[in-house]
Length: 166
Image (cartoon, rainbow, N blue to C red):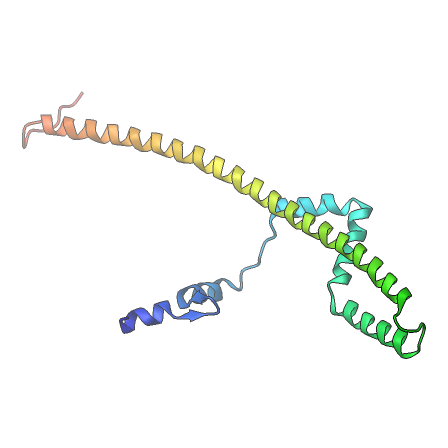
């Protein structure tokens, strides 16, 4: 590899140095949220069930959840709330696992819905851009026809002769 190529191809956190420079220059710009996702979030927030599921999922995915369970299990076993094999604790944890798995599925469904909103918006943009591209091709063809007409008109005039006035 040539030395001048190695600096442009060098990787920094999975991106090229050029990409890093661009990201650094753009970092001061505000990040605007996707309007379609904002609308989706508003619709989702209207449902009490969704708000509750979102709160539970957010808490269950936090380190506080882990810390509380460490304290709970240690206290349960340490103070001898029940004797080994901890049947009640096992049942409680099993029920909790069932509910948490349901909330994980709800969270995945929410993520899928967000991806679908973005995909729908992108597809709409693609269709609009396709229409604009067709219009631009039509305009370009018209310009080409006019250019050819002007070219043939100027070729038909003898060299040095003034253009006819009408």
